[in-house]
Image 1 (cartoon, rainbow, N blue to C red):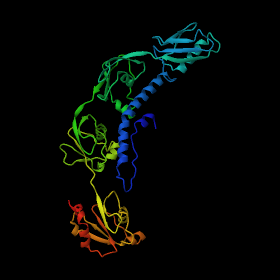
Image 2 (image 1 turned 60 degrees about the vertical axis):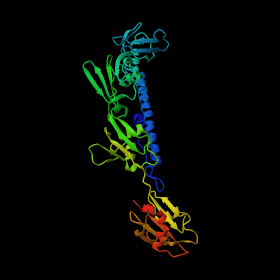
Image 3 (image 1 turned 30 degrees about the vertical axis):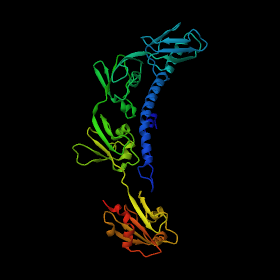
Length: 413
């Protein structure tokens, strides 16, 4: 993986949680928050790394010498030849006893070989080393949405990002719309594609007298964020802004957010668009919906799902239902059967749904057979009432109804 790929890789690996953890729970929210908060740092780090690499290339063995460059030539044992030289307008340096030696458009290794050959006319087996001292300078103009408008001095061979870094810019600069004006020619660049590693040819080499124009970010309008977010309200919509961008601007979702049911309501569209929160926050472009002015992003609250266990158990009561839960597991959540009282051979489970409790469907399960593997075990559903028979008395369906009347509100819609 390259440096750019690492710096801009915001993919996350989502855990596969079992019962007791919402599939897009706190881990995802924390991870997505970390991803969003680290993106600004990654962008700055990437720009710094790019500039460092570019500067390093300017002084490396592979960079070509240019008119105006200052180089240092070291000839072992020859002080008269060991000193700095500036490359003149003809691309040459002038050395005593040798005259003009052309080194422009050569790298330091090739220049060393050429100078060694020239000095070989007057010295015996000269040992020559060539090093950069100072890159030739040139001036370009930087205008538009930058902090320091006007002339910027850069090195010959420097590129667009070096000039932008010297001029400075903030969030109001639209790096996706940068122009180089070179005489009658206009070169349009989307530098965000370069920063993301999508197109590494976009960081163009500058020429003396170039004018760089940085456009201002277009404010297209606003969207509305509602529901379970740390910050709700209007969201300024910029060109190319997505759901993920909006969440990064407005903050994380709350612990009560149901990230499975996030929707975007768009003007003129009948059905709200569903958002795959995990995929969008992981940077999946197919899931990260592009926003439009007037959009309403709704992050609903998690619905409270519960079941009730009564009768011969240690901790009768109502419990939250999280994910897949079997009948025996539900009894375990309630502390298991009361010793010498709870009879696991006779467990009644009522799937009430939207019906009245008195008309709820009831079935009796022998949990001992289930645990022995000789009977199928049902899953607990939202609103179920589970009654573990008590040895002290027989139980009818109406007995159960009378017992659970305080929980009757569970079955109302």
